[in-house]
Image (cartoon, rainbow, N blue to C red; front, top):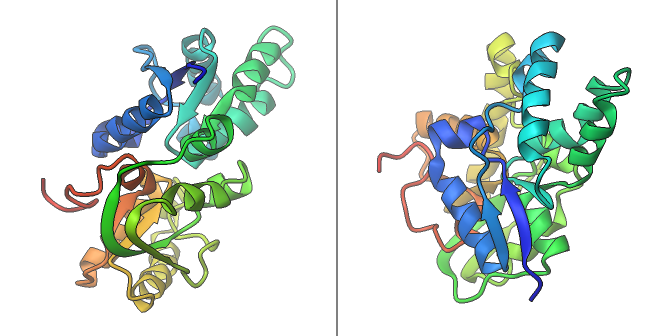
Length: 252
């Protein structure tokens, strides 16, 4: 097996709110034969600033991220939104900067959402993992629309023994998080996530899976407030054999 040296871009939310996802990402990547490095100089990718029109701060954070990630063969991100920011929007940020544009394009070109990387680049599937549960899957907006992440997580979840995957009505519809959208328009966000929570419960699933922690926190929060028994996990947690711990929003 060819060993890939990859940088794990952990993301702010994973670092602060759910480090378990980062550890699951490392476990899965190492099982797939990767040499994983977590660059110490990484901070925020700049997405909140970019979404809010604060271009100066977005550019400063993008430059810092580019410098931190340049030395590595590939960059892997357990988030479609952060991955989409680096891969799709960094080149746009430096469109008129001839010094930084090639560097932004180089980092963008080797940045992958983690499940797409494991599936497409490594050709890996989990072995010996068992989760006796019924699950449903939400396709996060950025991962789906910017990075084309759709079939890859389902292919990685399929080999898990005991796991039944059932379709979610409106699985490609926004959950209402939208980064800073939920802060700017909380009433609209709450209405959207209410529909997502109802659709999740209607599946009869035990677990709600997705690939973006922001979406998962939003959906888990609404489900918890409604008294639902549906538990939310990042899909990589199950894929890495770490689906036996507390769900998102549950106490450890």
